[in-house]
Image 1 (cartoon, rainbow, N blue to C red):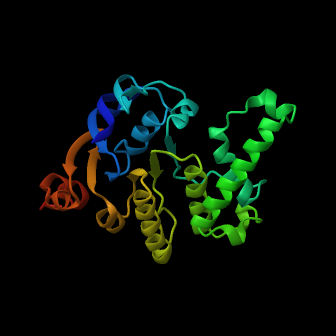
Image 2: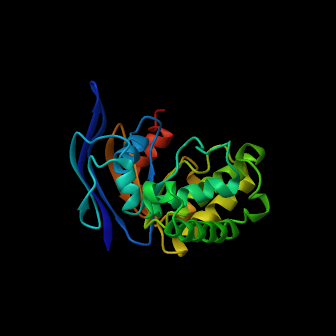
Length: 254
């Protein structure tokens, strides 16, 4: 069953057409990858889905609700969480506090209740702490929970960003190059983590340049080139697609 649908999406920057008539669906409980050379429009597409950019035209539907041009916080509240190419953490907060702040998107107490430190807010803060401790344990971050992010190895910072996104209890998580900057061992751990997230019932939409990782974990792959969709299918289908091979390897004369 498709629960994220992108229909005839367009986005340009001046005279550059970054996303041109792109349509695809994402099935619930799957891992779908978006690949393509640099400048193909992959991150622009993610920014449109997550509300960072406004669409020029087209539709984005999540559980049959239109997302196009909603602000990012509204989209996050609906159950779509994301990470970025560059790790975005709060280095003046501990690992535990970074995870807890992700949970505050589910907060219902509001500013007034929190400002006056009312009993309702106490209960909610306790629930946020308990959920954050659960996530820290699941991601094997409990031993470093008291540290600040800039004291962690880069691979652990990536995992922390995942953990913070997962405290929101998303239905779908959007991962923008999660293996960027990781060594071989860290990339293998990342592949296991992404698969585990899918097994927890969270759908995954991922951009990644590491083709071995993508081919190992993906259920479906969408290929972009110059903002256009040129192929879509299983990893086996994509590996045999002549147009995809030409884009990545060049033609016979190259």
